[in-house]
Amino acid sequence: MKFVCIIFFIFPVICLAQVKPKPVRILFVFDASNSMKSPHANVTRIESAKVLFYRFIDSLKKDKNMLFALRMYGNTVPYPPGDCKDTRLVVPFSQGNVQAIKQKVSEAKPTGITPIEHSLTESANDFPDNKATNMVILITDGIEECGGDPCRARQKLMEKGIVFKPFIIGIGLSPEQIKTFQCVGDYYDIDSQNTFSTITTIIQQQKLNKTTAQVSLFDINSNPSESNVNITLYDVSKKTYKYNFIHTFNYLKRPDTLYIDDYPNYKAIAHTIPPVESNEFKLVQGKHTIVPIDAPQGFLTITRPVGVYNYNEKIKCVIRKNNSPGTLHVLQINALDKFIVGAYDIEILTLPRIYLNNISVEQSKTNQLTIASAGMLQVKTLEAGDGCIMQEKNNRLEWVCNLSQQTIQSFNLQPGNYVVTWRSKTLRGSIYTIEKKLKIKSDEQMIIEMFK
Image 1 (cartoon, rainbow, N blue to C red):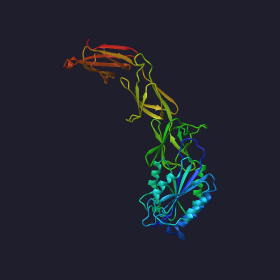
Image 2: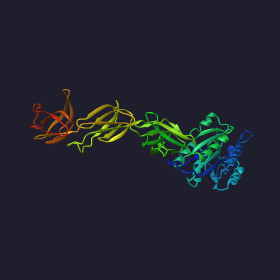
Image 3: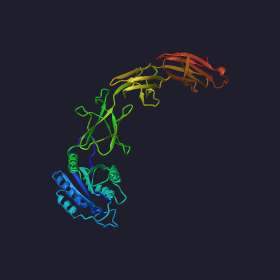
Image 4: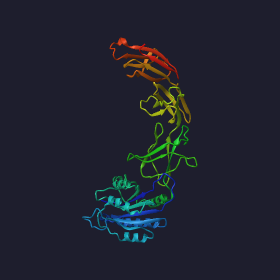
């Protein structure tokens, strides 16, 4: 058994900036297939569909900013066998064509097969351009007979850059049949007294009230004071990003307003360090949605005085979450960057490496850490050999780096006590190892000769 439903597809213009109101084009796609002969409420389905169609177009034509067109399918090739490409634009968009559209609908007689997907895909070509708010109202019994489905049509239209928001108005659909349209849009019952007024109101809102959103980045005091962060909006179902922008405040010093497609379920990612994200959300058509993200931030910098031996040395600092092994960020020495409020572990890639743990970042404050300037160690040998530099700490030796095969080598080392070991490659006994102890001071040079 088949049932009549009416689906509204809204093709909104998408942008991330303030735009002027645009005219509205509404394309009616009318099902005149053989299945529309079946009864509903003491009349046929097509008669019920015609009555509702007349109500909609008579109500909407009062708005002089609206243009209408009519596509019809299933009305030329009798079923059986029918033709799955039986769809055509009957009345194109033009001024003053409402009577012509009503006349074609009045003459429609159920004849052929029901190619919903193909008709919706073809409807994309009926709009002359995207310089208006383009809508499609599909009037059908809701049963695809050519192996297609509205979901796939929606995907094809989106691939062409056309995004639409559908509303399904069904006649007597069972809960299971309603579920077949869940991937398409929201369901309304034709027998509900509120359905007509609800849908006409939504269409008016689409023209007069833009669907907007704002991403509010909250500080530690729950004020939306954070900004200047890259935000990415993801389509949750497709797992792909749709919008990418730098967050800012408008002239009223409020989070900027976004004009975006209201169809998908979204998730917003704020690319702070580390990134934070919103809960999944869906925009309400014709309304403004606030998307909250907790993103309290402060600043962190690691400085070192410009010394004699490290004035052009670009030391990197590896930032990790406290007690977490993964690298979160790499910060250059003497650079300043913003981090989410919390505790961090830092590994500074000097010789030897410096480890700073549980370093706090506080809201809107700058935590400046300073390390000592390096000193210079020069190691001289008479020939190639093997050796290393170790730092002496608490009567223990910690490896710093290996010596190369060169006879003269220089190292910038942090201040501290060190031990250098070396053995010539030509001498095979461990007894020939040479060990030298030394102390490195900031901005001073130490030269050791491993042959004396």
